Length: 441
Ligand SMILES: [Zn+2]
Image (cartoon, rainbow, N blue to C red; front, side, top):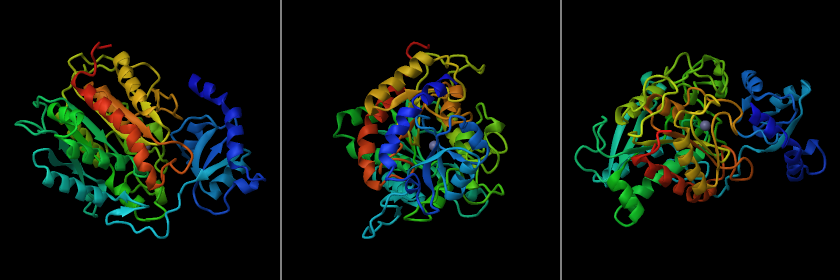
């Protein structure tokens, strides 16, 4: 919890900067008059992120530099202020989409691809590059399991295909790197980066030396949309995307209270106390209760070799191969295990070395545990793959907190800068797959 206090001490300076940005004359004018969702900071020193989350507020996964960041409507803000808390407007959830903008097929909100758009893309890539890409169905979304529409979960395996590559078993000889995106449906930038990663790989094989060498030696797995039902909900409004984080598993909660947080549903340190049903971090009825979690864990445990003894806090061996990355947004962070505790992972030296190299590439901060986040994240995918298989698992929180490129719904024009910044970090992690734990410490 020391990091909380350290960050809290920055509050005064941070608030001064914020006032400069947002105060147009009077305090009330800084608060939007519409009922639309917006970003706020709860700046009272007594505000506790975990308590606010438990009470149903949408507490965001960002640093506490300026207070506790929340996404809230006018009613929430009134309720907090009536309780005596100080709440400051930070910025709008939505960026304007020009009225003249004509969305291409399968896109929304200025160019983001729908779940169906990603699926069409996956199929097109596999069909156009049979020597470089294999498309696999790895499971189903919740709605699909209920025959209520929904989606098959898709994964692409991209490599210069030779005999035995991209098999659903651990006998393959190439090390594996998996990039997964949009498990939290409203984190729009993440799926788009996966889409660009796929195109970059198949488009540069044979011409770009680094890509060619990587694809000759490594299986690059991509799960572009880990939560397609959630993305359907998000993209159901093409100019004001719906702020759905969880999957679409009914739980009696209205609006975006629907669903289970798939990044709290993994079966490593799953924690029933992460949130009640309607909260944004509801972990589900039990570990790996959700079909999306089962599909993802099923794929990963079938392709990666397990090099970690079963006992928790036992180190994975130097024979470990493979790396894993899950993309979330936002906060500009590279996160390495563990996320469920501040205790150092038994392979902390090696895990941190890779994260540090990623940070050199994308200029984002490097953190673990609760560092930089509001609270721990037990049941997350990155901890699961390291904690159960020994494969180093990382999260990149893409994008900044404020500005037109900030938050969950950045302007689509921001995607090229996000891509340029993060591509070298993806390459760094992919190239580490051959021997990620060289010291075993
Ligand atoms: Zn997320």
